[in-house]
Image (cartoon, rainbow, N blue to C red; front, side):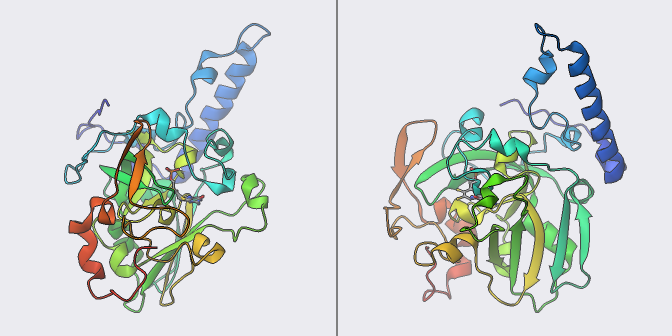
Length: 326
Ligand code: MTE
C-alpha cells in the first residue's frame, strides 16, 4: 500500500475552514459533477469520472488523508486486500447479507452532526469535519475478529476514543459510554425491519473507553471510509468481537447505568455486554477456537483478546465473575 505522508506546510483546507463552508464546497462539486455528466452523457458516452468515482472522492476531509501511521500497533499477518474488505460487511441498516456495499452508498454522511450528552459538564453538538480538525489523527493497523468466526486486518484512520472523551468532558459520575448509529429508514431500508431494535447501540465502560486501543475510525486504506465501513465515524475495539464496533455514530451518551447493546437486546444468551474474544468460550451455535482470515483461505487459531491481552487484560482482573467472553 502506498502511504503518502503530508508535509508540515501542507495545511489541510479543513483545518482552517469551518464545516459549513466545506459542505457548501462539497455541494458545489456535486452540482458541477452532475452538470458535467449531463452535458457529456449522450447515448454513446458516459463520463469517465462518473464511472471511476469512489464514494470518498468528494468527501470534504479527503485532503487530510493519509494520516501518519502509529507504529505501536503491529500485525502478525498481512493486511487484507482492500476490495475483499470493502465487499464483505455487516451493516444491518443496509441489509442482513454481506454484500451491502452498493446499498450502503445511500448513506448520506454530510452534513453529519454528533451529539454529546448525559453526564458531561455541558452537552453539545459538533459536525464531523469540525471534530476532525480538533482530534490527533493517526493510522493504526488492527485485526478485526467477528463473532461469526471470520477476521480481517485493516489500516484504520482516525483518533483515539480517549482524545474524544477528554474533549467531551464527562463528569466523574459517568461509568459507561453509549454510542448510537443513525436511525433513518428512508435512507437505510434495513431499518424498515421493525423486529430489530433500532437504532444500533453499543457501549463500553469508561475504563474501556480510555484504554489506548479504543479507536474512533474515520477512514480506511489511507482515505475516508466508504459508507459500508460506517462512515463518517465508527468505533474499533480490536480485542472485542466486531459487533461492539458500532458504525456511523450520531451520539455519545455518558451514563451511570449499563446500556443494552443491539445484539444483547435481540438475544442476550448469545451476545453479551463484554464480548471479549476468547477461543475457549464457544458461541452457543458455533466454536470460537479458530477463524477464517478473509481473502486468504487460511484458518488459524483465535487468540485470547484477539491477541491484544497486553493492552487490555488488566481491565478484567477483578471481574472474573462477569461473563467477559460473550
Ligand atoms: N454497526 C451498525 N450500525 N450496524 C451493524 O450491523 N455490524 C457489526 C459492526 N458494527 C454493525 C455495526 C458487526 S457484527 C461487525 S462484525 C462489524 O461492524 C463489521 O465491520 P466491517 O463491515 O467494517 O468489517
